[in-house]
Image (cartoon, helix red, strand yellow):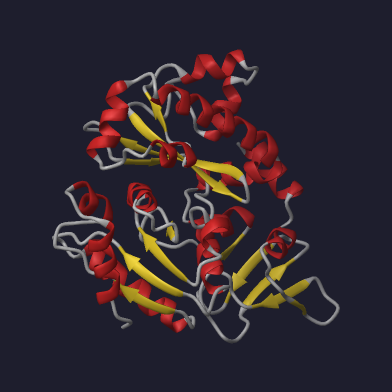
Length: 331
């Protein structure tokens, strides 16, 4: 682990990593220190300092500091091991993307070999074959992926490093509907939704990337932002192709950057309308942050107990959802 950590730090200098993510610092005199706006929180005066020689950072605004690994932990909301995996993906993105593409293709093929998986999609209101194909939705029955990838020439270490198998050699995804997550045309993660009693949501231990299908939906002047990929799928099926998804209610810095680049855009937030008010509170907080960033944000109210997926699965039509959008108003 220590050797891998030092190798990462040597191959990805912190200053280069930040500049690749559009951080624009100013050099302090002629030294090796740089200062700029903190990429970890919103601020108007630069307080984020980087020592290029030591590859260390510290922000006097939010009080966070450390090395490259620590920055990725903060920025992407990852654990130490997840941050390591994320950076290893940065070193060899092409190899990782190929492996994920082979995995997604295998799961996509498996979907049509398991009637119970197709039935599950239908129960969730997703039945349009072209949408299922476009989203490259697959099914992980469990126990078969490792052998398939080994026959293609991948090693157990590669599968373990990306998180496709666990330390015991078992498949990470078992009895799950699988959605590939794309960023700039490459698969960067896989999301698995349990079809049984297991914990519902699972992502590989790596960045979830940007907003889902951003390259397609960013052309619209109004966007619908949902919490889950099944929400997105049924809305695409109903014709609302301006829908994107953050895979959760928390936006990563990259997702914030994507939305902030469209200040003229209207964002309709449609999160879960659940009984514990978590979805409503997250919607309200996100709408206020978006408005503070200069975007027009509106919260869409669905009937109590519903998210977009359950709303359509229980019989709602595109006209019903359009009416909900029309009733939404900015804060």
